[in-house]
Length: 412
Figure: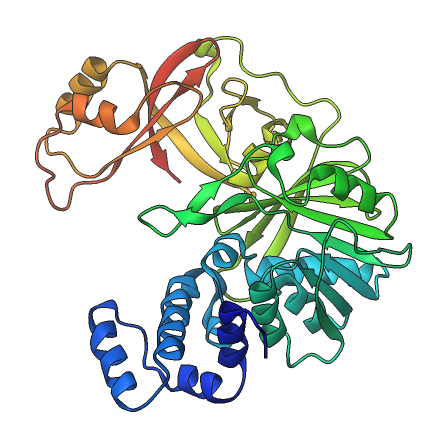
């Protein structure tokens, strides 16, 4: 048993009376949590253990959307939940490491051990290293069913990695401790703020057989190291992460787009093209259709690859919208037909709506490539009360060529 009370409680939740108590709890209900706590204490349960078990129940309820049904088998912390990899993304990464010939992975800074869990499920041996003893206790409980997964309390800066190992690093990207009213801690965005630092990532990459570093999806494509492959990953329209790979595949940028819902998705890779079409130079060159690149494609700076695939042109650099003469069926793009091109002024858009849609239905405002607050723009439109049964109007606020425009588009 640990001398640290927090670690002791986490260890108790993973085994014996604590695990039994946690397994007996009903689905978490915030309104009924106080009454449940009172009842459990009256039944003779350790008050500290009851509080810790209810905290786990609350975290599991919060993590269900991210981690799925298997969240009920996990011990969690708030910071660990914020940084947890989606299971389907972790499974894909583990499969790629196994295909690259990796047999043993050193998870440097394993947190709750959820990526290590994916490695173990893929048949890999795992050494998971975590500096925080309490978090390591949670990881040990989460990996208890996998005999080839070992959790060590140690320093990711000094843990040895050999040339035969695969290495995984998920540097902390949030300030630990203080959370906002939604339970989220402050996100760190600069490479120099990561822990372990990015210098340790590149040091490991120079040694290990294959190295993967999970970074924030906002990672700037211009900062990709020369020898690394960078993958921006999305799943059903949600941008989840950027992962840097060394030792597997060719260097450069990729967008990895997952489609298929909560079941096993289909993954599509979008690579750089050698000579992407130039963006539109003028607003009057806009064609009749607009393709919206998947969020991973846009984040990777690969909208030019979409333009090349559909024989079109990005509306303006960085918008993620591509003008094309006809739709092309791609799983990593969404198509719209252009109905009207208007000046980007609320008065002009309001006049068009009053003429063409006097009975206003839902108005969806999309924005990219312009410095406009969509909600402030909606207020300026002074929309009448929504009428039932009226078709949706989609406004695309963007730059076309060199001019800000409001496009009225229809979803295809």
